[in-house]
Length: 231
Ligand code: PL3
Ligand code: FE2
Ligand code: FE2
Image (tube, rainbow, N blue to C red; front, side):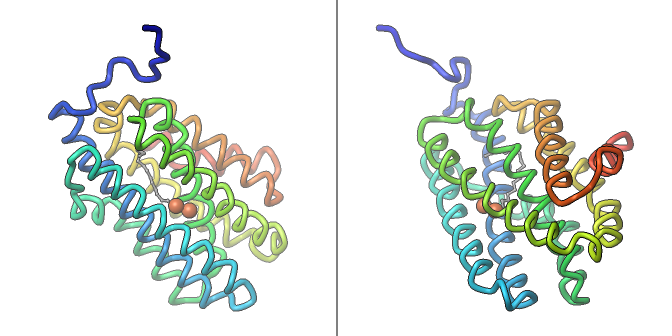
């Protein structure tokens, strides 16, 4: 029988796969949970966009439930303690910025950095996922583009007044992303995802976002690779 095999050499039920999945699955569950909280916080900070932001927050909690189902489907228990640590630095920077009313920094962390990270990871995961997780992830990634778009539109409309804060927030937070990527490199490879592909895809999405907001090519080059060489 002829069958189209998308990921022929992956054994989704091997102990090696399940062990790596317990961390990667936890990361995406935690990422969706924190995204839900971050959009709720942004809804408080941006009353004029409250309804939109609460809508995004709801999507994030649906995403979380979808990924929890992916773990259950493979009989994997997500390592949530690991995942909390994984996000700790970005989480803390978001909290501090929110407490100080630095909305631009909050939007850069959640709607640009985290959404671009998610979009690249999910796009690279889809072709190597099991059938169940692939369907879930395809649905999720469509929403993530809307979340990225929210940040892009707001920052584009406020570009001149946001520019300096965006540069500073990028300088502070992008190196954290490269360190996070290094931390998942080994587990991601077990799932069939290469770090080089994740980096490339992230830089493309993030660079496009910066361009849509109003940055020129030189700024984009400098900003989107910031801290990469040191990672
Ligand atoms: C916000 O909507 C989503 C936040 C999730 C962030 C996920 C980052 C994922 C990095 C780990 C790479 C492996 C991905 C595997 C996909 C199931
Ligand atoms: Fe999400
Ligand atoms: Fe999102």
